[in-house]
Length: 162
Image: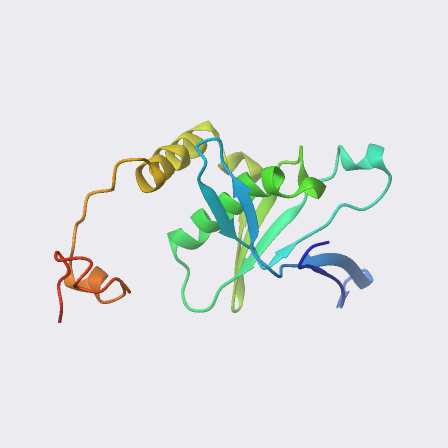
């Protein structure tokens, strides 16, 4: 497994010791979309396939991403993108419909596979087309956004300083 390390986690639950073999993300996974755009990112943890090939058809991976701070809608969207792209980018998950989970300090948000529906996929493809399309996206500078941008004023005259 490129850039990944299998990890066995154990914890004591009501039914005794629980054990799960999982995959911890390493280098970003790359996927080239039909448009030619390349998406690179990595979730924190994906439960791996286990068992004979026939059992894998019934198997559903769960993609976990651990966050600090308060819950944000963008955290769920990020995991939903992983849920959509992992089966395309990682052969071990091809043909699966992963579930998702955003983990915060003291809580978690489960995301059902059905959340990645056709409407979500179409919205993703639309915005990817805006970002990676042949025409540059509109520049909408603001003090709030420009302060996080690494592009110098010499390269972006619209940049707002201060």
